[in-house]
Length: 128
Image: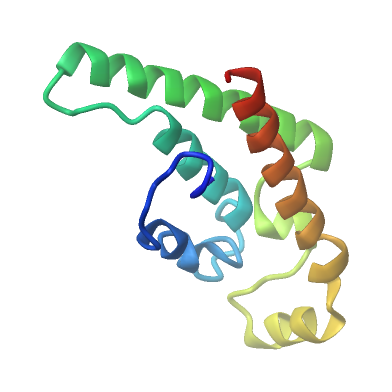
C-alpha cells in the first residue's frame, strides 16, 4: 500500500504497529490485519481537508469500501476479532505465551495478511 499509493514516508509502516493481537492484545478488538486494511482504505481516499464537500465524499467512500471489506473478511473467515479468529485471549499472559509457542500465527495470521494484501492489490487494479 505504501508503494502503491506513493506515500513516501515510513511513518505509515509504523502506524499499525500496535494493532497486533487485536490492538495491543485486546482479544475482542478487530484483528490487526483488518484494522490495518481499513487504514489503507482511508488513505486511498485522502483528500485536502479544506475542501469540505470533497473530504466528506472521500470519508463516505472510504467507509463504504471498509464496510464491504469487513463483510467479505467476516464471510470468508467467520470473524474480524483476534479471539474469534484464533481462539486465544491475548490479555491472559499464559494464553498469549501458548499462542506464540504454538506458531498458529503461521497457519492463520499469515493467511489473513495475505488475504488483505491481495484484496488491496485487486482493489487498486480494478480502479487503475
